[in-house]
Structures are given as C-alpha cells and as structure tokens.
Image (cartoon, rainbow, N blue to C red):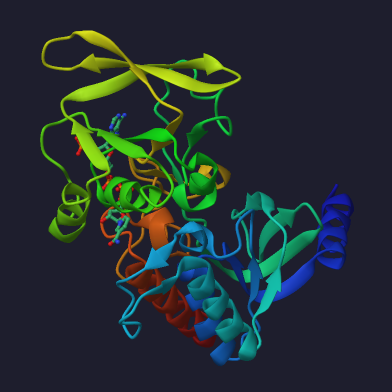
Length: 320
Ligand code: NAP
C-alpha cells in the first residue's frame, strides 16, 4: 500500500508542471498579482479562465482609474495590464482550472490542458453577473436578454430596451445603451437609486432614459426574441405588460467560488474570506479582487488586492 501511494504521488509530480506562484484569473487582481510576482522573479503563471481581462474587458469605458484623466476603454486597460505583467516575465496560459486540491502542498490545480503543482496560489476568479431568476430569462439570453451593454448594445439600434437595477452598473450601462437604443427604461425595485451621484445625475439628465420605480420584472416573453416583460408594482402588487426589445440586467454579482467550496473558508455570500494580508484559511493560498471583496469592487481596489496578495506570497516563499 505504502509503495502504491508513493508511486501515485510520484506520478502526479512527474505529470504536473511545477510553479512557485499560480494565479487563477486574469482580471485586474490577477494581472496586478502577476506583475508583482513577476518583478519578484517568481515566474508566475496566470490561468485566464474564460475571460482574459475579467469584467473590465467588457466595460465600455473606465473613468476612475488614476492616471487616465480622459478615461480609457476597458478592453484597452485589460490589455495594458496583461502587457505590463508579461514584460516582467509573467506567463499567460489560456486555460481554466477545473479542479483544485488544497489539502496538501504543493497545491494541485487541474486544467483542461494539464495539471499544475504550485507552492502558492493566488485566487483571482472574480465575480459573475447575478440573474433575475424569472421565467423567460434563460430562454431569451442572447436573444434579447443581456448582462453586458458594451457587448450587445449595438444589436439594439433604434430599439426600446429596459435596464434592471439601480446601482452604478445599471446607470453606467443605461447611459451607454442610449447611444444605440431609441429609449431606455430603467426598472428599479425601490424609489431610490443605489448608484453614485455622478452616475445618477448623468442618467437622470439623459433625455432617452425613463424610470419606473418600485417595480420588478416577473416574466420575460417573446417570439424568438424578447417582445414583452411583465412588471409588478411592489407597492400596489399590480401587474402590467410592457413592450420592449431587450432586457439588460445589472443587479450585482456573485463570486466565482464554486471550485473552492469545501477547500477554503467562504462567507455566507460565498466570497473567499481573507485577512488584511490577502491570506485565506489555507497557508500559501491567497485571494484578491472581487472573489474576496463584496464591498469595494473597483478596478483599482482589485488591482491593489492583487498586488498585496503577490507581495505576501513572495514573503511566504522567502520565509520558507
Ligand atoms: P450593486 O451596487 O450591488 O447594485 C445592484 C442593484 O440591483 C441595486 O440597485 C439592487 O437594488 C438591484 N437588485 C439586486 N438584486 C435584485 C433583484 N433580484 N431584482 C431587482 N433588482 C435587484 O451592483 P452594481 O451596480 O453591479 O455595482 C457593483 C459594484 O461595482 C459597486 O460597488 C459599484 O460602485 C461598482 N461599480 C462602479 C462603477 C464606476 O465607478 N464607474 C461602475 C459599475 C460598478 P437595491 O438598490 O434595492 O438593493
């Protein structure tokens, strides 16, 4: 038995690629971590997952990243982060983690293309847009239902669309959609927005934007593509039918932590629990960005967490 177990471990060691730092995720947190780990000469490997650049890469324009006073395109900023990390030796691997084993060191991470054994891990898998979970939403996704104005706005030229949500994303994307759409109707479940005052002002002053307050969508229907939503006033309970060509949903995000469930401590909303050093409940595993941050969720805070995680991973390796 002893020999069998050892040969299993040896086979695992031989088949896997050994790295000092494996970064899972290539948004602002992952790429900032890659830059710092690369400059510490740790030759980090970054697994990109499905979206190189993370959420910022599907954001039309970023106006609040310091140093870029005129704003710059989200895809461009994502590309700059990547180029910067690569310049110092980070390796970007276009693959996704499919399974992790943090029960022993080195930590094992399997991907579609192979397997890694890593002395340290930085989790930067970000978050995914939340769904409304109403009938019709799944059926019409890609056929009128969207979670990304930057990606899909163009398809709604001279059409009427609704935007669901009252936060910064809803206001920012709603204003962006007025470039294409005839009319954008924001449907919000309360009578006050959550968005920052600058974005609220911009949306309220846009002549193409209208608001429907205290209302939620409880059904999306159409014939091949979206044609109508059923609204329910949350104060009166009254249902109404509302004609629309598109439904853009911006109601927050959920952290991408399914892969780590049972291996690391997660909070009640499934975010990875980290301390101020970006350390998770397992020594040698760090987390940064929106996967571990339900509060700030900005490009700059995610990048800052990524840098901090890489600095701490460097110190952790040095201490060994
Ligand atoms: P958010 O701030 O969490 O806002 C989500 C909105 O969706 C809220 O208005 C919420 O209503 C509503 N909502 C949640 N669940 C709902 C449901 N089931 N049905 C209907 N409505 C629902 O999310 P976000 O707008 O995506 O922003 C996330 C973070 O990114 C924030 O920290 C934000 O400041 C940041 N962000 C910043 C910028 C920028 O600075 N330019 C741009 C985009 C995002 P309630 O208000 O009633 O809770």
